[in-house]
Amino acid sequence: GQQLNQSPQSMFIQEGEDVSMNCTSSSIFNTWLWYKQDPGEGPVLLIALYKAGELTSNGRLTAQFGITRKDSFLNISASIPSDVGIYFCAGLAGGTSYGKLTFGQGTILTVHP
Amino acid sequence: NAGVTQTPKFRILKIGQSMTLQCTQDMNHNYMYWYRQDPGMGLKLIYYSVGAGITDKGEVPNGYNVSRSTTEDFPLRLELAAPSQTSVYFCASHTRGQSEAFFGQGTRLTVV
Image (cartoon, rainbow over the protein chains, first blue to last red):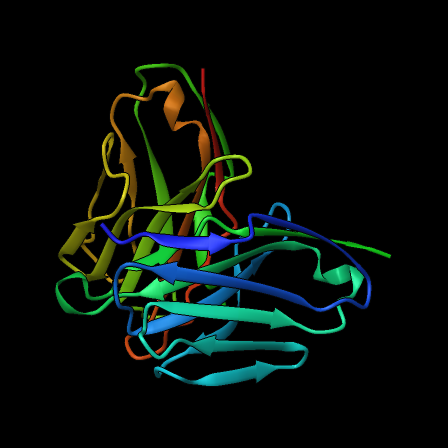
């Protein structure tokens, strides 16, 4: 089945530092998505990527859809304490698995003031 | 606008009992999903549906069943609860052509 490998599993950084995390897959996805989950809540969408090579920003967040359609990265610049949470990549499949939305294992981000 | 509503929020089941986790959305979304999230882990897809009358297995479907008789509702059924099904369950939905999936608040299930 489709597997998303997300790294790193966790990050401990100082406020103001930049953060980078990525996701790779053995399968091609039509859409790559990045979500954030706060404790006790469901995930919330940060950025959606629809085309291979697409680079999209949302405030301090930047994400790219890899050219091969099998990978994506998320960068957070100038981190702040409220960036703390779990970040998930997700891939939306096409073809015979059309509509299947698969999540990576998550990256736990801790920001020290 | 209620969005995605899950009930119950919390439940404790005894081994072997059955229950249905309810999920309803009022956004007329075609796509609906059930995930489970174990402590400190990611979201694992249990079942999904691309429209009323259509369901497909995800990564971890064993021990669960679903139905999609209407666009709004996507209940998840546990027939014989086992301790391994202790988890937080999330329902999500999105519309065709718009990939942002909206999540419910989750159902925290404990099987003892």
